[in-house]
Length: 116
Image (cartoon, rainbow, N blue to C red):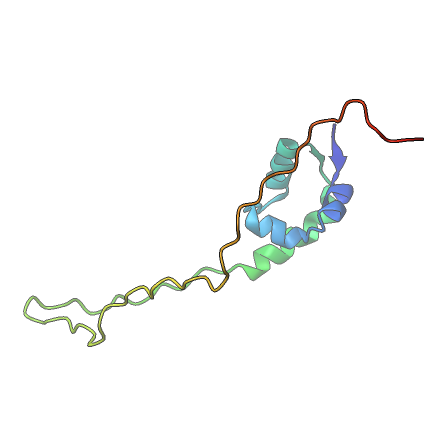
């Protein structure tokens, strides 16, 4: 059974841009593949194309970082002066332990003495 894109996105309260980013959907063809894999009737390309146009204008190539200067063999790397971190001891519970109580019987009473 298939569900329409409109019902699917409304029911799940989806923001299409967020879904496209999480699922790495970058084109209408990618959306068609996603929809067919999830039993969704895809929207018309005209209805959703503005998301792909906005996505392509926002994404820009990431600038590469400049490589750091190589370390010389004789150069020592400074170690931090702080002592290594240790885990704090586990906190003890402040609640008093409860006594184990016997369970109530679930047997049915046969021949009840109850009067009508």
